[in-house]
Each structure stands twice: as structure tokens, then as C-alpha cells.
Image (cartoon, rainbow, N blue to C red; front, side, top):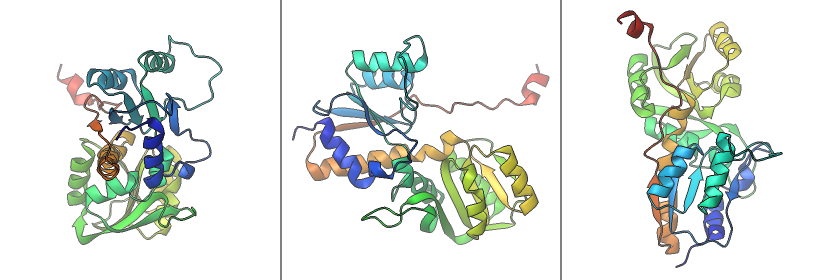
Length: 277
């Protein structure tokens, strides 16, 4: 069955409705034509030139990223800038570019679910619930529990393994054991108080503000910043699984690749590394 961009968009809308996106967001088809055929696609987090190059090298005609390539309204397209160069190359090479951002964040089995399930949490429910016609359980963040409580060191070992990071930032007192946690993949500093009110033992998210970290200290509540990249990366595999199932159901002949070139934006530099030189 011939697959067109509009069919792909309709399929994504079925499990991550674009109507779930926040009002400030920009999701859906950002570059391309709805009637263009799709034969292979690459999935990643960030719309970078390097990811676009990977799509071309692997023969993908469509790129689906979590973060949108066009976020703020454009008054001009300066192709000397990273955004302008990305747009120029995608248009030149006729690469369709689709964004699944906050619609995938809030969807059932979305970004935070992917993180929670990899950590081994059960009984998931939204941390910040939303009302959406025809769908229950949508909203940002998740709260869940482990079948058996973990010590805090054992929990951190699991976090390091799932996020693929060597260090995290911790604010507030660490609990002796961890049974119930609240989390939000990506930037979730604003949901810290919701996490405390939910009765969670700690909160795992990213881009935690300084003022929120101080609040955690004063409130006696533990917050862990696991980096934006680390807490959202599990969503790429989740999206791949969703699209694989959809392709089988619809009879689409579609190759689906997950990004191999993406890396965390930040690297950690230790003072000791310089003292030894």
C-alpha cells in the first residue's frame, strides 16, 4: 500500500493527537507536502543538520523529531544560521519533516510513560492531568510505584542505566528508600510542587530551575535532574514501536530507523581531569 505524508500524519494523530499539543507549541508537518510518498523515515529528538545528514545517508525521505524545527515564527530565513541551513537542506532534498512534541508528551503511552516503564514503575497516572475528548489518562508527567521499594543508591544505579548518563544533579534530602516517584521527561521544573503533593518519594525530571532546587531543600523533598536528553531519549524507541505496529496494521511498506548519530548536547567536565594534566 502506497503511504503518503497525510496518511502518516493521520496515523500519528491516532495515538498522539496533535490537539494535545500545548498552545505555544508547533507540531505536525513542518516541511513537505501532504501528498508526497513516504518509504522510509528516521526518528530522533532534535532537528539538527547532523540528523538530517543521517537521514540522507540512510535513504530516509521523512524525518520525525520530537522537538520542532520551526518553533518561533520566522520573519526571515537566514541560511547562514543553523535553523536556516536545516530548512534549506530539507527543502532542497525534499525531506519531509514532522514534529511530535508536546502532543507526544501528553499522550497515553507517551514520553513520560516510556521513561517510567524503563525504570520499572507500575500503576502509572498523569502527574498533571488534562481533559481531552475521547481519551482518558492524558496529561504531562507520570506518577508510579515500584513493586518492591529500592534503596536510594539502587534507584540511582537504575537511573544511570536507563538515562545513559554518568552524573545527575540532586536537590533536597535523599529518601532512604524509593517506592513511589513522580517524573516528567524533558523540562519539568514547574511540576515539582505537583510531584510533592502527589505523595511521591522524589521527583525525576530535567532543566530544574535554581529557585525550584532551593524550594526542594526547604520543603525536604528530593528532586533529581536527569538531563533533558536523558529523560526524553526513551521516547524515540517508543515512537518507533508505535509506528512499526501502525505500519503492520495498515499494510504500509515502511522502513523505520532510529537515530544513531544523536548524542547529549552537554558533556560533563571534571576539575580533576585538568588538575592531572
